[in-house]
Image (cartoon, rainbow, N blue to C red; front, side, top):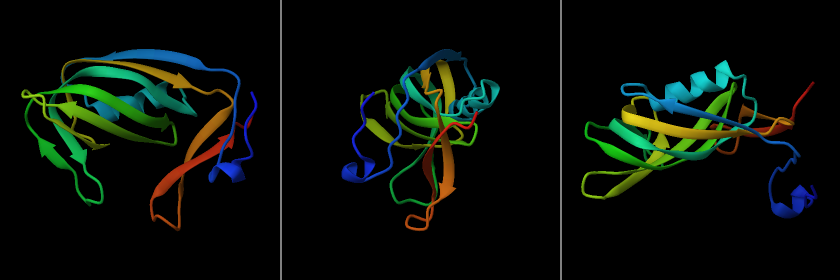
Length: 151
């Protein structure tokens, strides 16, 4: 796979040729974020990402942009999308949800998002890479660090 020089893209970039696919279904009452973190540990995922996710929540906890705390919603939602990265080193996920009237909210997925009926999720993993979480002095957060996997 040909990859442009990362410096011309304005960021870090690594490439890998293979892709591992996994799927899971979460059941009523399970915490979406915690279940995905547990899944990453169980399967020793080093560089994974969400390919597809649908389902429903009976409660949602979302942190909005530039807010220090999550907001808790105790109503039912449809999961429209779930995006982000996950590994044994940490996860960073964003979610979009629709309420009973079709109004959409979204933000940073926090613990406390409880499954209502189901969550059907497909995860991809890039075997040649590792997604680490490292302190970034510019942002003050643990940010994604992409490394070639050490054998």
